[in-house]
Length: 397
Ligand SMILES: *Cc1c(COP(=O)(O)O)cnc(C)c1O
Image 1: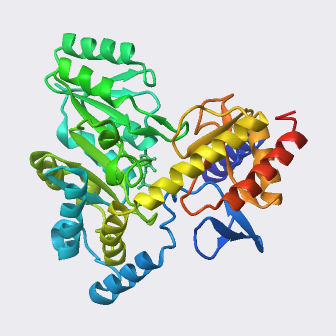
Image 2 (image 1 turned 45 degrees about the vertical axis):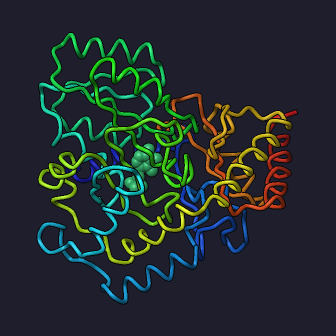
């Protein structure tokens, strides 16, 4: 047997193991545009699992802005930013994001995964400390792994543990301390306790970084995110254009000028990866204009979240508490989450089961997400499907 054959056999075994545990993720194909309703396997289904909170993914204004930007600026940049990949629109979007978020400046990345991957290493050295919530997004975890600062972790949202880690970092002689947290924890829909985290940061002279991917556009006044929602200031923000802000792709870091300037010199995913294409940048600018004025969409989104939660709870489903448009239906077992997602698809409702390694073992769930464009009829249809499926699979009585 060659090494190559042995290696491929080994990978086959890995895949068989994933399958045996019921953890295989299968991609279902949608046809046409992303939206509250999508075409799947030849039929129209309701879609309750996109990060399309404001329903902008197929918004004609964004499609037009993307076309206009492509007509004016072409298809691709064929360069990283610092060689010849910076168009006037890139700087306009960076300054527009900074204005929207209330920071000095911002810097674009191909994705927020890259923004988080590139954030820590240029800013912090071995003399420094980064203190991270245990449920932070994988990209924060990876970004921290890539930096030389000492790492401390606190149990999710546990403020006593955060304080203990701050004390340890200080006792260990840290020069600078950065606390890193998601603004909203995406598997649970829980908000980070930003007022308490900010207060602790101030007591211990630490800085605060918030990844606001599941918040920007719909939480807080004008959709400025969780810090604005709580009325606190984060020192560094990261976010995505790939969720509420139109759902295409692109990430950013926003913060003080010196932070952004150093990242522009040193952040590896910025220096060694292509500039965002004109269509995405042009539509990103249009998305911010729409979002700032979208109090109606935000109201519809949170009305839908309230109605949906109340309906599911009345039927006896176990939800995680909260008011965020992420509404997790807890099922514990991965196979049950898979079976229920498949059964709901047959009933015309597209949802995704989440299970290990995305959430801890034994905490499998169907994560539903609300969208401003879902109607009451849509939600009643989905509630009826959940009722039938939940009874069939013995989840509810
Ligand atoms: C979605 C998400 C990301 C990744 O964003 P992309 O722009 O899709 O790479 C990073 N952090 C959090 C908290 C997210 O939810």
